[in-house]
Image 1 (cartoon, rainbow, N blue to C red):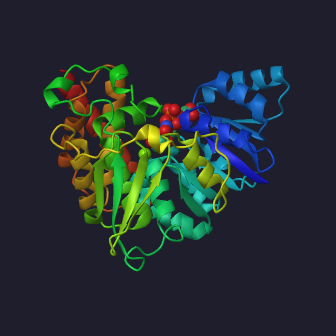
Image 2 (cartoon, protein in one colour; image 1 turned 180 degrees about the vertical axis):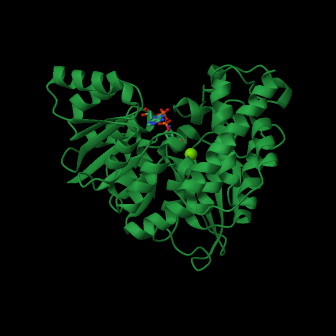
Length: 392
Ligand code: NAD
Ligand code: MG
């Protein structure tokens, strides 16, 4: 029986994870669930899965959560605040941690799970982008295993021999990440001036949380994923390519020196990657419909429009600069996306905020977690100043 702490249970990845888990009550047991503020949803999930621990990240919701659990006669221990997330990630109640919190808010629990040697199922790509080397050190210290949930990285993992080998020795020439192109694929820049948050969040193939949906619309999602691939697999920036594949059937590819290209295909449904990572090295039913190649009939590819979607190049630029630059990129992006979703920043200004932030804050080196968090805060303040300046 694998005991699972699911952080970010009320989100899109959380729901897909619980769907897979519920199909295999003989294999998996949920021992901790967390949410940010959505007390009603978290209480409902606790009623269904009866975890030992229920964590509400915003302490303001703790009393209400406790009351609801009493009403349901559910005995989960209520815990609140960021420290409780760390306990949920590192405690002895779990063998496996699903890191499905969105954004930098997931960083410390991700690191704690790695340090504690858990099987770490990682959806929270922002924590890899911010803290790649610290995360690697934490994994080495804990001796656990990281299995990527991001569909592209899960695909690459599946296409590599033995998961995560030395790429040169394994004969890998390059990693090709596929991108759907998002809801605005094919549009020119001037056509995107007035797009609304709802338009940006209407993804053609995937149903996801609002932050990653906007990232998909700007192509920053692919930019973050290039950095994620660089850090997870040790591939050089020049050996990671992006190709737009609008159908989202091929989730990514690995090209070898002999000319072979291995791809992982499947319907665009996160439950495949989640089931793969939960059961690895075994395979389990995920509830995903079988792929029908005859219905699909063809697979299309095109180059990414880097002139319209500048975030992709900004991510390559931050990866090349290294040090604190990816932290700045991520922080500025989180602030700009939040402002766009709040209606205070136009869509086309998102990349402007990030570019200005990268320019104003020279890349320094990352020593430790406090230093990293300090760089994150500095970048957020700078981004907020830039956003305020653009609004004025
Ligand atoms: P979501 O917005 O649907 O859910 C986010 C979860 O995080 C919720 O449970 C929310 O309560 C929690 N959360 C938000 N802010 C928090 C805070 N400050 N403190 C503690 N908890 C907080 O997001 P999602 O689409 O499920 O994405 C989650 C992560 O997975 C992101 O990093 C995203 O990039 C990544 N990811 C998602 C998908 C997808 O298909 N949705 C695919 C690949 C990667
Ligand atoms: Mg992805």
